[in-house]
Image 1 (cartoon, helix red, strand yellow):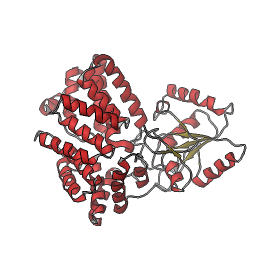
Image 2 (cartoon, rainbow, N blue to C red):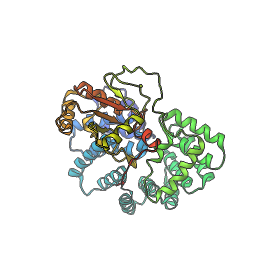
Image 3 (cartoon, one colour):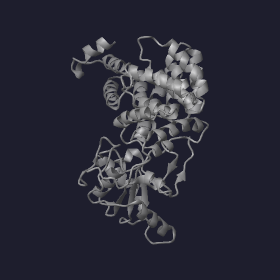
Image 4 (cartoon, one colour):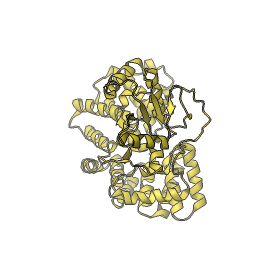
Length: 433
């Protein structure tokens, strides 16, 4: 397959058939990890094929998986989770209309359950799929990862060991190795976890950031501080915007929390920074416009036409409002609706379809039509835009778009929810799905 995919890459894209385009995607996915760039390329190829075969179940399910994979594999470490879920779910619905009842559709629906955090239902689905296809390594792995997600790592270990035994020697094994290492880490079996994670790193050629993160936690938990810090440095080189507070707030209040805490404790010992300082200066000019990519990156300390509000000022403003003051700002959140266990109290979530980055005129019109009814007839009402922290562009981008739409009183809370939480101010506790 790889040789044929290489041959196809030498041909003009316009000469490739639907089957050719599918083969290129399958070949790419045989070599995980799937990076964001490769995922985007896969989506481009599949969407091109879909023009010629709009009712192909395989194309629709492949597109759904490409959109949902970052959610399943990277969780909160992506900036456009809501948008990916929305698009992925729409492809699942289209596939269901033409392939209902098939094993492939059942597997796709189980994958969607994982993306939505509905792991108990996913476990039931994958258990049924394994009964129907007991030789499927993929179903073993998906079941085990769902078990880990709900705090049943002890049950996941034998499932992963069986998946590794069944794996073809030519297939990449580091994915089940990583999952087994994580399960052992969460069970407190750190030395065993280190062995499997080192094997995973060797087979993956160091391309999977999660391996470094898990190794940092496992080494720290057994007192190997220098090794832990080395692994953490390698992880931060690949994922420079990560914070311990961000990791903590992605932990679901379920039975998995006790197992996950072993990871968090190890990361704290390894030295992962707790949060981003809201006043940090990345040396970027405040004249910068909307940034489409990367969205998880340091931001300037200001934005043209936008006032920056700090934590103390915002807390004072909210206290004044609750005390009966005249100023009633509208708090607009750009954060994913189900990525974290907390939200900014009193904020209104701006749906992702209204804030593509950058926007086109049609989207700006839709944003204005959505926002104007919330202003209570006062077009000068203060708008305060909130994201996670000072290393997320979503809030700044939206603030700039609102200024471009003519709203005269736009503020950006650069520190975001993380700075608010760090200051010990009240947050809204969320119930997970």
